[in-house]
Length: 420
Image (spheres, rainbow, N blue to C red):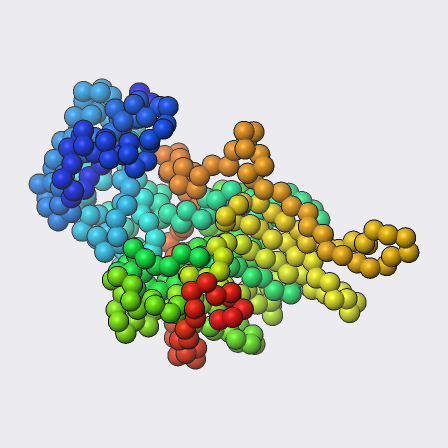
């Protein structure tokens, strides 16, 4: 903790003391080490477009280096702001010299950005060009915190460490893959932000496609960041719309959405969608990947379901389920003989485990804890690469080009997905 400082930069009217009180109240209350942490936090008030604000920020960082650390420190710039501010902040950071490592080979600077990375393929390209102008690729960390969830990290370990599963990971044995992101809550409080996106851009372009890439990718040559990025990008680059799937597109909006604060009264933004995708390679040919997400539904859960093919005319289907929210774990649906003398009836059984069951042993880390930790280490494994972002946007452009084939329906709050 000795050589660690958090310097917050924002437009709100805080000083060091009032900002620490804000952090304690909103984030650290009850933490036994909160006093130690709060001492490491300071605040610089400034405007994103004001060059003098960045000079004050630079003076603060230089003061920390000179008076506290007695040497050049590494700098991690975390842009926890709406994407509309990225361009001006990145440009001003560069113009102020703050993106230049102060210690040459002895220090580094890195930048973290939150999704969405652009609003379409063209804006994503502009953002990449802007980042490339001021940073090297190894300095850029695009956060998709879902990639850092324990259950998603475990997909690759589960596949490649268990010889009973990877041989089944293909069109020969898998009938379809369902990736679901369902929420009970509405957009209340996020209407202005959400209405400019809709469900497809809010969670489809990033979270759902990131999950798809982990399921469909082939085994990389190693588990380095570069090898994983390469294989994930290959999958996303081969995505097409699965035209043979009935109901390839579903779009809907919950009743009352247009009355939410910040939402246009004639908004056409979808709050629910289903898209059927196909991966154009030999392994996954003719296997639909069904991507679904929605708000104001009857339940909240995020999961990936691998549905295996029926065999020899049997009605039973095995499933492998990666549970991501609300609890994280893995479940396998299988079938066994029902107990009883002479009984030949088959019944469904579930073999499962949850990460919560290991609490107190190897407690699952919070996704944001993991991405911040990895950013400090310089490990880009769980971050989206330029190639992945570009490939994802190209697929989303195809989907949006076909939206007119799926008229926007409405559904009641609390509806089951099957009712939409």
